[in-house]
Length: 128
Image 1: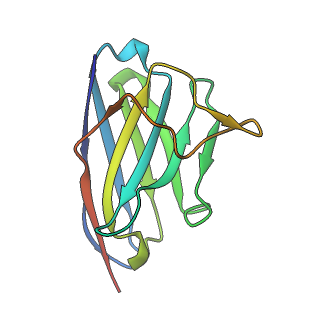
Image 2: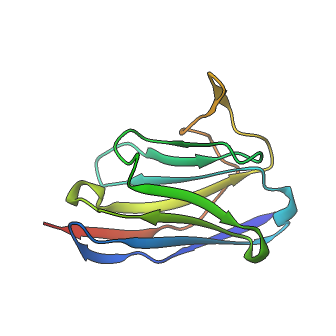
Image 3: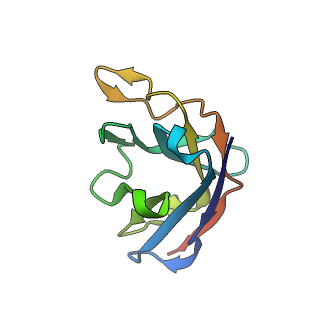
């Protein structure tokens, strides 16, 4: 079993940056596919970024060039660096992890992986 805890959310003005962390505990050696998602009330969950066990990444078009997903293996932490934030980035952000490799679409990790484990989320609010 793996437990995920997100942190790093907050309120920033447009153009600002935030660094989200997702600390994993438990059987962390079993995680292979990991990713970040976001959701706002009344909208479907949106995949933001994915990281496969071999280091392959994928990003939603809306965040490409602004967000970077990475993993600190020493700390068992998944990171989402978010730069040049926009009001439309406002959402609850969740991390997910699975013991299997990411579903690949044309060789790229899917953003809509149905992860086995998911955190409780951290709120990001971007004001204009």
